[in-house]
Image 1 (cartoon, rainbow, N blue to C red):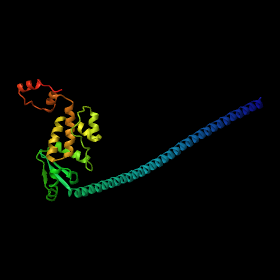
Image 2 (cartoon, one colour):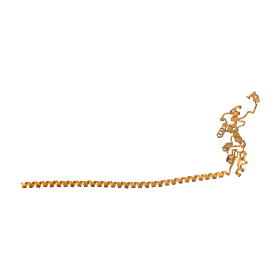
Image 3 (spheres, rainbow, N blue to C red):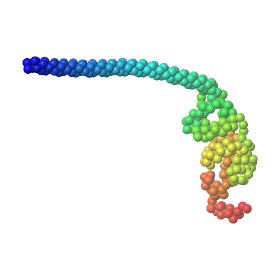
Image 4 (cartoon, rainbow, N blue to C red):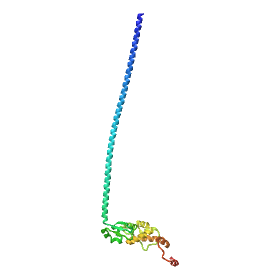
Length: 272
């Protein structure tokens, strides 16, 4: 009995020791697992720190690269701006040179320019060779140029002088076609075009009203420009062919100087 009791006690101790050992081993495994997890967590944190550090380095490099790019871009813009400024300076120089040339040419031309002053106090600077057909002032040109004085045109205003100069410029090296005399009684515009035989002259005459044409005739008579007088006479004759006596009086502003008795006597013998 005593032996059996000892064996039982010994077995129970062995079982208790076995359980304690298992428990200790289980605790050791748990601690080992816990240590392993902590290690993994630390490694993960370390990797994150490394990634963050690398990311910051990359960002810093990109910022530096961007700053360098901006610096180079600013340098390029500065160079382009300087090139633009140089182009502007070159263009300005070229423009100044052209203006100097024009000024020199004007100085040369002034030596051969005549000043004409109109009745409305306008002064025209006209090349002397353009006035060779103006008989009134051909003898005055040389003295006017030498003394640098204006030739006063007592019966010509600026509007009519502009028209005269326009005519002189067109016929500078030529003369208008001779107008047939007496002027044929034809009313169509095409006939007038064929008479003057020049499209510019036809357009020049057509743009003039009757009042303008009459005023220009007076200026042309004063200046003694026979070719222009003939053209204007053809213009007025053509206008006259297009109307009867009453219409002509109204059109040309002609007042009747006949008495009623003279008109009645005149009507008794109408012209066929």
